[in-house]
Image (cartoon, rainbow, N blue to C red; front, side):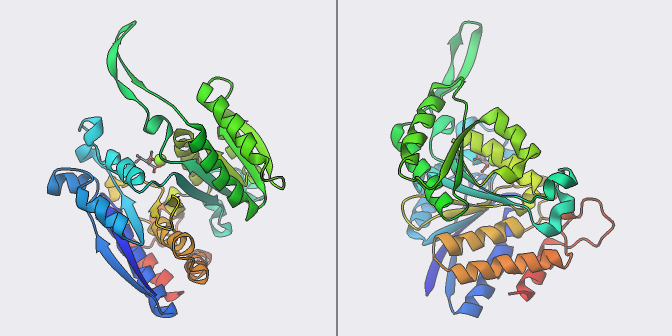
Length: 357
Ligand code: IPM
Ligand code: MG
């Protein structure tokens, strides 16, 4: 088969890690007889510098015409002083919205080989964990009404969290469907003791839960969830939550796995076209130095094969290659944790992964 993949390399380490994932996809294509065609489009700071806007029309059109899209990262100090609606991050939100990708799947699992890299106590990591974070991606406070105005204490700024029943229903369904293929447990995270939008969230999730009697559905307040993630991560299977809570909790979940450099994500809508990206950022401090860990992007490419193209065996092949490389003790700087072991560069660890495919 032939697949057309849009590439959004973006800023910082984006180009290095996307190039690594492209090499892996090409190798998998050779092995299984698929052709992956890649077309690059500009997004983020590089797009601002090149064509004057973070999300050019060609990028949106190109992504919508692709079978699926792989993204590196956007943003960096160079663009940090731009007004909010001109920032590279706005382009990322824009492409998620334009592609109608309301679901963000962020798996956080502990690789046995990386147990020592986790900041959690050994007795906690000993139990292992495998969490699928289902984050709502095109609603909530990220997309609500915002602005500046005169308030009670003078000038103020506001952002609004709003969720419709429809938006909650569709993300809840994704969570329950996901749980049916896993351990049949959903924890729905909200702040229903304070927020009205969370109360609607909770009511709606419970209504959808009735259609999935086999799935155990529990509510958890977001502050408690932040605590439980470090206290006992093994209790989680599927976590479903709003855009902002999901943003925050997925960084926490990634860190307890040992490195944010390992965590992949898939953004999906109602079609098979998705946007796949590592959950980490553009790491401007190490950009262009061949030091970045490409594994999160490589695993994102594996998610693309699985969720967009239904190439399960091919996806497994990439994940197994990554596992083998980690089991053999190969580490990038972020995974070495100051241990006295040889550290591989981005291209070197990519070569090791290619050898296992
Ligand atoms: C993420 C990022 C983005 C988000 C930023 C860069 C807009 O933090 O994908 O987690 O908040 O969604
Ligand atoms: Mg984030």
